[in-house]
Image (cartoon, rainbow, N blue to C red; front, top):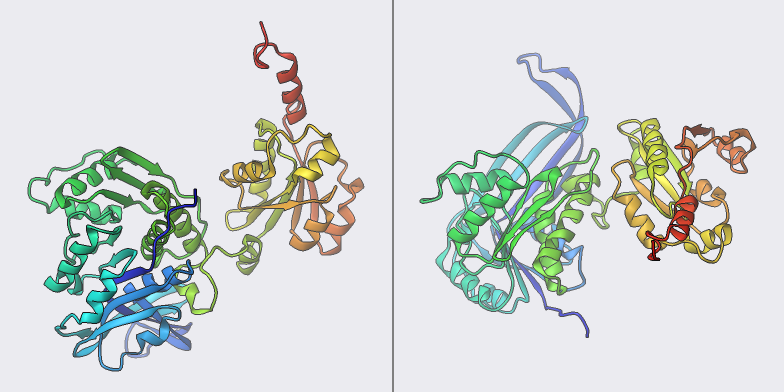
Length: 465
């Protein structure tokens, strides 16, 4: 049976414009204790619901429409390739947030602009009515409080999934919404200000607090589910059937700006593709972590996707150390853990550890026709789940020289009592100035020994003791 699919994704909400003025600070203003920014670059991109729509469009081939309000001649539409903009016109200009940035730090933000009252057009009503999934991206500028907008959204909630990304100054979600996605701080504020739900959640622990907040808000708003996002910890989904926790993968460095928009857009896209709500939240947590690692909203100025960059390239861009290690990793054991921990330590806090993993075909040639026990896809997934590992590169050859030539790590790590100068790959690694080192290993631990024990132990192999 083919997976359930849905049609277009319609994003409804307040559109903003984000501007970054980037440069260097080399002196202070002579008449005030303020830095002088020598502007070298000015970057513009959509913000608010515009950013959410752009992220959705970059994640799917389905039609993405943005229902919003713009001022006469506002240039935001030109910043939204792949998005069909359906807008009412109001007096004024789209609110603009301008950040002054030096050395990747924001020195100052200037907010200006604003829009007057608007009248919802028939085209906006038709766009919402024709949606397969609706994503409300509320930025507290008044659009979701408009009675005509709320009526259209309430009607949509009776037919299709409605995802609501709320704002502290925005209107509450319409009853029947499929999923509401506040962050932890927002959820605390909503609950503390909600009549009948002003109790304090004294246990500020994850996931207990977000689960309790989510249930209180789900009941108060009359929505199907609430996913409380908690940054690096992930998200907690509270639905009528119970609580689900989705931890986030570590995202070293990066910029969290726009992570909430990436999360909401990913949920909407996943629902449009037929995912269940809990699966959609899982996909969204992973997408948000990748988005942060890639540099957040500021990385969207160049064309392309917002997926996490190659960790080797990212580490080198930071001037950090790239370390690689390799092996079959058929059955993970303590020896593997020690090798990976030692290799990650050599990379340093800002560096990257890449595991070069033998493919299934490569393992069979090295270990025999009965190996590997665990497929390369599962072995790669297990390794990526480890905090020490930044990336996994699968290779088909009998030795890692080809993949090392592509990666060109600063350090190649072998776990065990190897004579590093005699390894086949040592001359190659030395050719670009890299080092080859051996790290202590856990004697007596190996996948082969574990498998041999399973075959001979009558209890673990399923035989008669």
